Length: 196
Image (cartoon, rainbow, N blue to C red; front, top):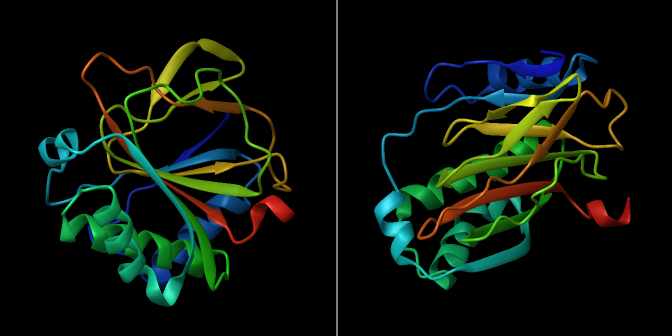
């Protein structure tokens, strides 16, 4: 499929090897979307379904990622320390990957399809991780009839129009929601991306 790359790393492998592999994949003109499947040793579905629909947006220092993640989840009435730790790890990795001391974080618990149309964002790059509910969908422009869906907990890197190697092959959207479903999604952007 044009514009899609996937790569697997051993569980817990998030050091220099992870950084180099992701950087190499994202520098390629052949990957508008990079999907990194992960398996987490815990399941958040039941606890998340009990929480009310809400959203947290903040600019977070990578050095204070865990404190911020705990605070965001507390405000959302979600008490899951393991989830806080994974969110913080994703923030630190994203910051290291793009040499950012601060990252813009959005944590969204929704029961609606927020972006029903396939599109590309006007950003440099964005990372999504869905922890509960249906996951991000994407298509190849050459085969729009085939809809693909990222795995739960995967790190999904979406190049935007501002990325120098974006080739306009792949488009993405948020998934449709069934009655009673909720989706918890982490969205990370480079610092002050709106000002770019």
